[in-house]
Length: 77
Image (cartoon, rainbow, N blue to C red):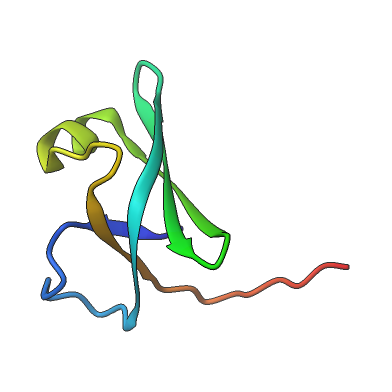
């Protein structure tokens, strides 16, 4: 699950940082799905709280950074 930040220099242990622009934010009562366009027709999706979207002031078109830290990677075919 990617973490989202508007600050590229945030102090965090995750080292996989991907820059992109928010293309879509879909919100229900408690959660928001944020789709980040990272170029080359690729997107990253993250589910965060609706409160976090509001607190960060996230809007479609904002430049953000997705930080990814994972213990497991699954590959399917």
